[in-house]
Image (cartoon, rainbow, N blue to C red; front, side):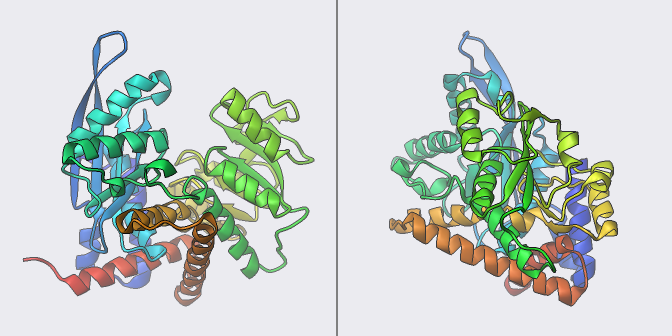
Length: 419
């Protein structure tokens, strides 16, 4: 299979565990192991110097049984077919875990967006949109921002799609600016969702409370890690260390998150923040802390890193931060409460769903309503996964995957197989 890569095999291993725990119908299991459809496109772009470069783009639909496919578009040099197919699979189950009537999709372009000008990025995005225009739509597949993309990227996609259709179609993407149909609270949603699941985990853990003295370390300081840090610090937590693509900072007395966010915005990264010492990712993951939030790249916690972790809660803000080997170590340790990505970072797709609903109904909610609805969804999802964990007598990742897999399986059986 063209998508048979370490990324995809990792997702298959998590599906396999859930299928075994559920005694899943083998026919359903077989169908879920492969994406329903996939598109690989060539994206030629005229660069600012007049030359033309080719980039490879992808869009994958894993399963749309429960509704339109939903998933982000990432711009990164590591994007390949296997990664996109793997993330599309996880999106299927993530949407189901939080009860959304959506399926799973993912897309991306193999490119380093940091090396391109704004005009080059715009031409890249608009050309990519024309190549996948018949693959996406508000009733079929709704992209969103991911690594290397943002609300401006979504605006370009929405505008290009609308120009081709001949009328404004705000519901074709989510994660847009509010001025063109975006939702209040969307940018902060994933980080908020991570914080909400941590709060729920603390309620079921013996002798653990979130408040003054609770320590936190975070890998990644963007929309996920930065927002989670801000929310947790408001709850009284002390953020000891943070890393991002530029470097890392550590202060055993706690970092001033507001000052750090201002510094990161001004300097395009946290490296050199004056009120802290430098720290590497390896050192960060070995720090003693109550809560560790990996909110950057996937595959960063292998067996070695898992053995070195000294946290009580591991809340996966990133997609797939644990490799199968790392996850195996965590299950054997059994002293770390793991909040898996399909649950912990589902806040982003939840508010994306809210945005899509607002777009197609042309009726918009307040920020307070958005945050309240998000909290309700995340709380309910955690409680359902926790209950299933007790029933199946399994770990949290298997329980979360099983929750999503069962809902997709039920829908597949109800709809049957055509013809």
